[in-house]
Amino acid sequence: MSPIRLPRFFIAWILLWSFPGMTGLLADNNVGLNVADVVWDANGYVFYCPCHGRFGNQADQFLGSFAFSKQLNRTLVLPPWRTYAGEQKMAPFDDFFQVDPLRAYHRVILAKDFVDKLATSNWPLAQRSAFCYMQDDNEKPCTTSHEFFQEFWRFVGVPAFTKSENIKGLRFDVSGVEAWRERFPASKFPVIALRGPPAPFPVPQMQWPIQQYLQWSPKIYTPAKSHIESLFRNEPYLGIHLRNGEDWTKACALLDEDGRHGLTNLMASSQCIGEHPAQPVTKEQCFPSKAHVINTVEETVKEYGLKNVYIATDSDSYISEFRGRMPAVNFVHLNPTVPQIDLCILGESDIFIGNCVSSFSSFVRRQREVNGKATLYFGMPIATDNAHNEL
View 1 (cartoon, rainbow, N blue to C red):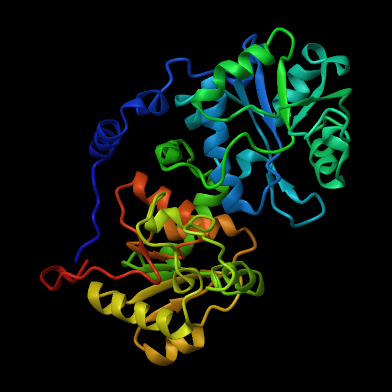
View 2 (view 1 turned 90 degrees about the horizontal axis):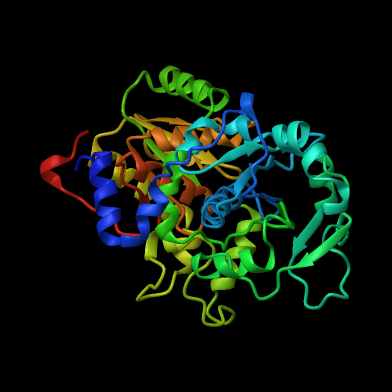
């Protein structure tokens, strides 16, 4: 069966029909300012630390934070990504994604441009409040509770805040917008600087279409395309994402029958079983056995007539076992220093099999959905159609 590729206009039509309130998510007439002509936005800014989890989680919550900024009609300051690698442990936002496509949805400015060109004259130290949830106002100030947060704010050039604001009782969805505006008007609080992202995890499915504005930068797309051309000679290939490290073993242990405590979804599992599933996510969907993974890949390769497989994982790639079972298939595991290259290659694959619970896989799912490409999952049935079993 050939992978389903729907035209973008058709996808947009389906989304708008399914979610009538989606219109505001899909476009913004006020597309923002060119960095070269930066002026202060009297509507205010949202500036947050992407301090929850690795890249998959950060990208997930970026979509919600972007939607939140639009709902408040405040410009979003694009934070660096926390990479947890290298001396700085962070990468500027535009190392991974282009900035201009984001402006088709809402106003944005890079953190460096905001701090270097606007903050000094328009956001004086006396007005720099850090925003976070506190059980009561006597708690330790927002940004001094952990070195982890201080590290981020020092990196972006905002080393100090003079006070903290408690956001207890406020929501990050549409229903909470007016409460934010009333409590924190832009005239008094020009910058809402948050200790964490103003968004839930995982991102609600109604915000998935915002993914279309996240377009890879040349730093990611160019090497990814080069790998695809050199490794697969532009032939069709299967992309797979494996999670099987020690950290993942512990995460999936939450689904053991004696300890799941009524969990129906876990982390990003709504991508494969829905936000309100009839059946809860299973241990096999979270941590499929090696035998299941190898059998599923073999079935998929045969079903779609594929000769190339790209493996993305930060742990065991099973590549020896794959090659032993399928010697005629070209299996590749690059493990690039920059994992975003893995994401780009998986997004470009003709068929993709992801991990149901992983936010890394969820990013690929959204990226592919924008381009009308289907996604399969380990631990889920593989659809077959013998009449169309070649790409």
